[in-house]
Length: 176
Image 1 (cartoon, one colour):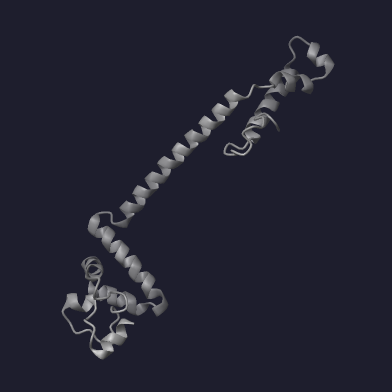
Image 2: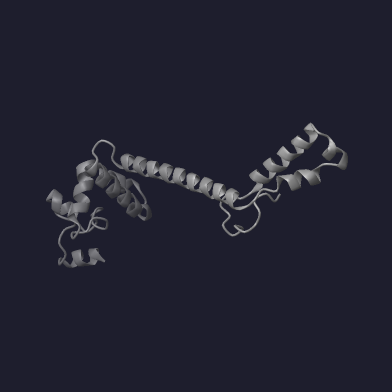
C-alpha cells in the first residue's frame, strides 16, 4: 500500500532511508517495515543493530518472516535503549521474579484456605478409627494397630483433597 504511493512519487522515503539520508528505491527492503510516519522505530533499531546488519538479516529471511523479525528487533532495540546492560533479558528476569512472587502468594493463599477449611469442619477421627478397628481391637488399651489405622486414614484423606476446589467448600475435607 505504501509502495504504490512511492511508485507514483507522492510518498516520502521510508524512515530508514530518511534517517540514512539516501534515496528510497522501489525495492527498498526497509520500506514495508519502517514507514515514514514512524521514524523512532528505525532509529532505535539502527542505534542497536546498525543499518547494514538489519539489511542483511532481512535479506536472509523469507518475506513472510520479515515482519516478525522486525517486531523482535524493535522490541529488543527499545529494551536495549532503556536498559543498555541487560536489554530484554532484564525485562524477562523482572517478569520471572514477579511470577515467582505471585506463585508464592498463591501457595500461601491456598495454605490459608486449607487451614480455614480444617478449622470450619470438625474432625471425625474417632469415628474413622472406630470403624476401622475390630471389636477386639477397640477394647485393647495400648493397640498400635489402632493407632496405625488412624494415621493412615487421616494422611490419606488429607492428601487426596483438592486444595483449590472452591466448588466443594461444603463437603467434608476428610472424605476419601
